[in-house]
Image (cartoon, rainbow, N blue to C red; front, side):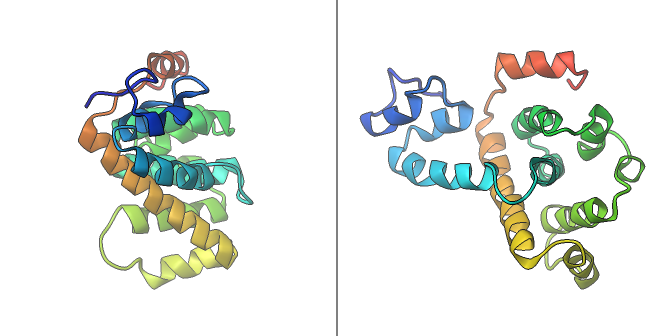
Length: 181
């Protein structure tokens, strides 16, 4: 998949390049400016700041990406998770490179990770007891946002994996620095 730059992007996609390289996802979506224009504000809303702490959101994003084996998203969000305050060992556990139970002992985080595993790691309904455990730690609006975040991440995981989007050299260098390659 050719990633477009500002020079080759269709006119309607060029505003997304005004601040420099918008990243692989936007550069791929630039092939279809109408989709880019509709999708990017939604992604900014889902992945940007909200009432939920950045750490909580990164637990969902990185764990979902690991369950769907999206190299691009795992690499990108390993960095975002570290920036959100997760320890290297927590990142490794979320990626499946260590046991979750050793790193995540907080009951709310465990309930959240069980929910993510139920949403992204299986098919069919999430078992009711997993939903009940999550609801004992998070308000309904938070559960809605967390579930939408997992679903949005799943969509991007499939998009990035199907198109083989490359991780930036800067991200790879940062991962190497943190011992996460």
